[in-house]
Image (cartoon, rainbow, N blue to C red; front, top):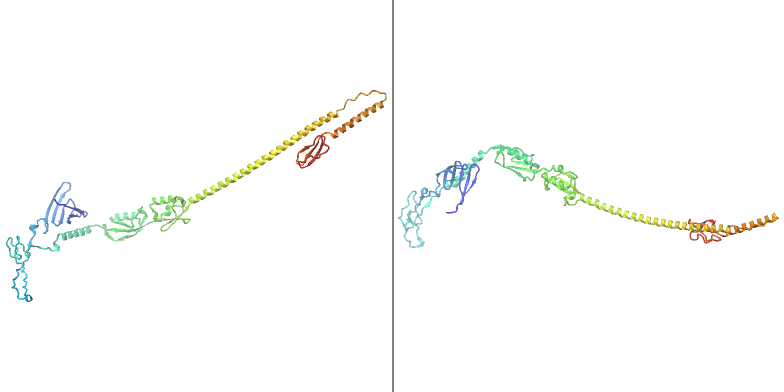
Length: 447
């Protein structure tokens, strides 16, 4: 069993082309499963079938000569009559040799019959003859009788009929509509072959028709309608608002059907935008394409944070300096207070010592000033003498006491620094007092 190949290419509802191992073998006209006509190399046949039952009928109504089936019955062989050549005697001289005349064959004459198994070059028969001149030759049919001419004719007729039977409709003017509206309007008229230039990407409602071919008129609905479209970028300023982060703006544009090629991004500092999370939208300028101007808000935050850190460091240093100054002032105040307290304590001690010395001196003076008991004078007769004696004793005692008071006790003075100085007991003057306290400011006398 030899290798076979067969494939059918559908022609819609009008038929199909059958392809074999050597190319196109036949063309079938009609629906699959219904009445049909097949034209091919082996001839023409008609048939029909009942779908789903496996029952079919086919009848061959004609054969093409040269086909595989029945070639022996339909083929007619024609032989070309070749007249025998006339023998010429050998010329005496090659230079004067005379050629035999050529006699053309007579039309309609039959070639001479040869014998079976004959081996002559000129008299080869129909059966077994081996002569070169009398071999059978196939009749070459005219081009218009060949099977492929009929197949092309049938295809042309079928195609023309199909085109003639196709419906026509008025092409609507869709310029200015978006791609979705244009497709809907054309489909409503029966046009299904709709192409866009360029190919619409994203949301079809963003693409506006700028031109169409054919522009108008009545055309077959099977014809292709080509639409030239351009993306409408005027809605970008409505999608992106000032104050949005660039990341949020890009997400909103993507959700609305726009791509990164539909707009440009420009930074107000002139730097290339590489990290969208650092930038905030400042404004959106309409154009072709629109321009989204952004600002590096992250840099501002970083600068603010650095300034705040510097201010906090400066404030901390100032506070530390103030605390150090306050601590030093407190220490100085404490030292001064301590010195004052020590001085006051010293003054108090000196006052107490002076007071004690004064008390001791006073006690001493009191003890020395107490009058001694005098003997009772004898009573005399002379009052004058007694009186005189009495006066005498009294005067002497008074004089002794006054002398003792002026030379005893201590001298007290107030120094210029506010301290009080006391001399040693029995000192005659203030010499040497308050020498270490700036000198004497006030002399208080002896105590």
